[in-house]
Image 1 (spheres, one colour):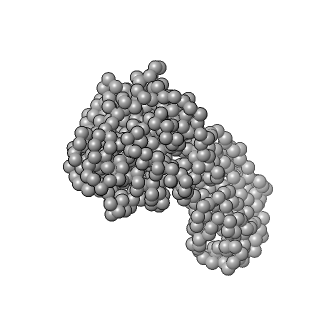
Image 2 (cartoon, one colour):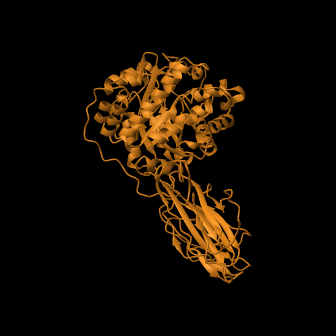
Image 3 (cartoon, helix red, strand yellow):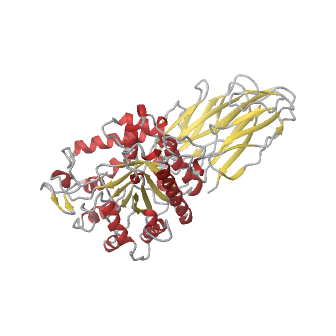
Amino acid sequence: MKSCMPLVLASLLLLMTFVVKAAPKPERADTTVASASSAPAAGLVGRMGRGNRLQVGLGTGNEISQIQSQALQPDIYSRYLPDYPGFSWTQFNSPPGHYVDVVAAAADSIGAVPMFTIYQIIIGGENNPATVSDLGLMQDYWDHTVLLFDRLAVYDKPALINIEPDFWGYAYNFSPSHDPTQKFAHVQITPDCAHLPNNVRGMAQCFLAIARKRAPKALLGFPPSDFGFGTQNVINFMNDLGADEADFIVMQTMDRDAGCFEIRGPECSRSGSDWYWGQAQYDAHFAEARQYHEGIGGLPLVWWQTPMGVPSLLFGGTHQRWRDNRVDYFLRHPQQIVDAGGAAVVFGKGASNQTGIATDGGHFQERWSAYIGAPTPLIDDVPDTFVFHDRVDRPTAARITSNTVQVTGINGPVTVTTTVPGDSARIIVNGGTAQQGPVTIDNGDTLQINVLSAAAPNTSREVTVSIGSVESTWMVSTGDEDTTPGPISFTNVANAEQRQIYRSETLTLQRFNSPTSIQIRGAKTAMYSINGGAFTRASGTVAPGDTLQLQLESAGVAGVTRRAIVVVGRIRGRWEIGTSP
């Protein structure tokens, strides 16, 4: 990415004087999702407070007055946060950091979600391996990062954060053996990250730690940069950084209009060819985008700084009026974006001499209006809450059928699977024949589960049921023996801090007279301890009078509840930890 200083300065001067008009009412998500990360694109857009469709935004170089004059209502409004020597975003306004407030207010004025691109590492050179080990530069770097998230905490609404485009590609190059843990970087100098290692991986994790602590409504994305390394190598490096723990992945096509590259215009002197893409290049691009989506935690994709030139048969173009077909292709083929894992596309200039909405002859306005008239819904495979009621005191070696649930809240076919020891589970759709999974269902279909109970008395058989991207469990327990303890109840934890280990109170197991089994289910971090011993997830045995304590890690996002389910004999106890909204 070339220097954006002239473009940022020009946009800044306009932004500081923008006129706030009445904001159109933003769309709101209609469905409640069980987990913020369950359905990648739909989950992200829901957390943004937007409607369930592919989002379209505008970035740097497209000013508020221009947007309002064309009656555009972008979903996202994007701006850089540069930190050049003598030109830091922290000093654009007074008091320091107020620029974040100005951009957020501008986004609010047009009913959009603000997006900030952190471009601070440029202060010492993004391709300079010495920058991250310079104590003075990195102290300023982290101080400015904390300032950003403190301002977003005051804003207290969703905002997208694009973390250091290009830098991670350079970091791949200068990290020994392409291992981010082997390249020193100052991290522990900022108190929020004192627990993280002083290396490039710790640097990436520090962004997440600061954001989750100070501005939990902020949504973070890392941009992969493939400078000829190969897609899978880049995916591996991004996962080594921990980018899969973020909220989205930032994608790019090019940072300049094709026509500018074709004639090697100002700020467009770069080797290469075939800048003006045809179908083959688009197909290859979206195939690669799908690889990033699937390879980096299944995170949704947000395209950023997508060129805005106008389709033309004529080679090249002129200042701010270059040929390009990305606006045209993306907004005519939104389903291809969604199928690749996309949640949003943000169009904008990568340099001040590129095409924008003020110089495109109304092309973006035309294509945006056509898309908004028939928007493309995102894949929503998160159903509304459903419950299969446990069956207890059932006969041994008998087929047991669950209650009927109706699946709602999805917008297309989803797959249903079951997992149970012995593969004895069957699925019944709309009252039909019981069949082994996987099966496909649609919104409104009914579902039952049928399983063979255990051959031994007083034995629980748990079925894991997956509907789309949500899992639930159903327990079938056989009866007979008097190995049933009294009720098991724990005090739930509300408003928990994120990614913290919590332990329940200690209970004494009573009102049964024979050793019985104990199992732990629910969240993957759920564990139990007997008589003060080590915490474990392994199934075991307890005796009357034993003490029981549970351990569970809270979720890493706001407003999410995790559960530990302990099964002692035929009795099931549940403990929940919910993070603060």
